[in-house]
Length: 156
Image (cartoon, rainbow, N blue to C red):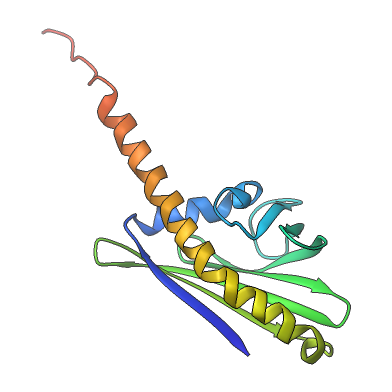
């Protein structure tokens, strides 16, 4: 079972990737995340913890990372894994962002259906929130650049 949601965001892929790499700020754009952190760099093999807005925190592991393009984290409890894959590509003056979620492990048949329901309900909202967050952040960056006075060149 795989759940997938995609959205167009009017920012370059580098902006989306920067937002993803700020793991301790995921809660600012993901309404289903109360807290997230990594115990090291945003790179394959780094462990951390994610606390959903409802429920208990679980360990997570970065299992794939391609800077500027994608990352996958795996949340895990004994005999059950939930995989979150995130990809971004340039498209139509912005970015096409896709989030995929799937389950593995001996207890996937037991936990999967209930977790899948929550993911199906929450993922569209999360994607809309990421879009709003990224576009506002990009706008603020550009407004800040426009508001700064140009450096004066010395007279010669």
